[in-house]
Image (cartoon, rainbow, N blue to C red; front, side):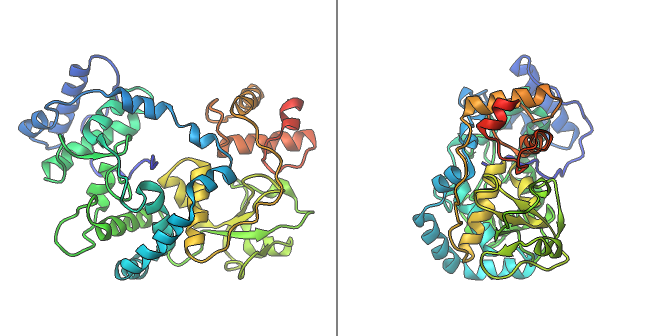
Length: 387
């Protein structure tokens, strides 16, 4: 599920982001760019031997309807008692690795355990797509070449370094490799030897994968030893227009507004935080701290990020969230109609895809304010009808 834009390692001397057209010509262009970046011609030729466009990759890229689910449905589909039990068992099994990670990077084990669980079920399901072909397919496709062309070039560099077998390396449909699903640029720049054997093997070594994942999170801005997400209780008279990830205030200000922690105490009073209501004012409520923003560098899906961050709190000892009594979510077609109407009013919703992402939420909240509705960013049938 990881679709973040990885940190760039290589500075290309050829900057054109071409896509589409005859595949042979496209591969020839990639080879030229790779050779300009120091890959040998022999390795470039060898890397692409037998390479092909795979329709199954394009099908997977176009079929991400799972992200249309609401937070409660999505989180319940991903979080099971088995995943919680396996998370605790793996925490014990790799206690030394997690302890080193926490000391070195300040990333709590629950955060990595949640990613590890969701990405590959703790290494058990790493994907069977040929990585080279997946990256070639998505780089050639013109939907997001600016993301995947650099990753294809990085895979070529990884091959030259002896870290990838283009014919046999497999992973996720979007080109991620290993137990925490890292893209080639991440592997080159942030891959780490966590088990001390002198090599980085992200598919077979959990310590390597976990240490590398922590290194990526640290590079993306993770703030050591700070919270990321916390369930809260919100007062009925809260100004809902101040909620959402696009609004931040100090924890002390939220406390003064009547917000309390459901368990434990709120974070440091000077921290900036947002009140997150994934299903509106009548559903679960969280305080999202600065580290929550780092999750969006790992994955761009609002519902995935919120679920991963929440699961990390569960693996760290938090209770099951209070589901509350939220109004029914819009169906996929209803959400698309809503996005069309929001777009017609000048809002940028990021695409008519039926997914309630951060941009659609901000647009919903703006229209709720305009119409005098509770501005909690949760789209209702009433809002759709008024629009």
